[in-house]
Every structure is written in C-alpha cells, then in structure tokens.
Length: 121
Image (cartoon, rainbow, N blue to C red; front, top):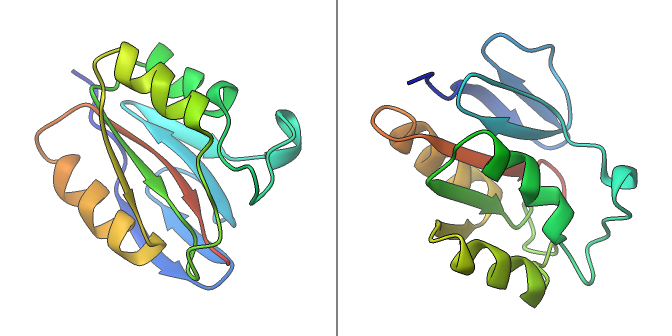
C-alpha cells in the first residue's frame, strides 16, 4: 500500500507536504497529492466541498477521508458529498484545518487516508 504524504507545515495560506511544492490548498491521498484548485468544480465556502472534490480521493483507494473546514471553520461540505462518502463506506472526519492536519498525519501512519485541506478561512 502506498503511504499518504505527511503534511510538514501549516500556516495561514501556506502548506508544505512531503514530495510536493508548497501551496495553499491540497488534495492528498495514498501515494501523493496535488494542489486543490477550487475552480475545477466550482467549489466555494458555501455550499462547500462538492462530490466531485472527493471523487479523486475515492479513486485513489482512501478508506478514511479528512475534510478540513478552514482555519475559521468557514468551509462547509455539501450534504450530497457526505452521502457519496457514506454510500462508499468511507469513514469521514471534518475538523478545523490545524486539527485536520494533525489527525490526517496520525492516520497516514497506518491507514490509506485522503484529505482536502484549506489553509485560510
């Protein structure tokens, strides 16, 4: 099983992930990750993370997914996104970003975890 990359730094508007260039927001999964471009699926704080945002994580074999809510908890998750993950039998955790990073890094030691991380509000 490929290991999910560790997040080595988080601060307002900046994240560092092993094996990737520094950036603002990330999609991470077993074996790698990439910058999370909200415009790809029209994601906004409201209504929030869309089903299409998490599909890539499912495609990479995640059994646990961590969804960050932003540093000020402004990022929501659409009910349809939760329904897709529940139907797939995925364990989901939604946390403030710094808590989400810590949880993700812990889970990455033993599980095929994925995550969406938003480093601002």
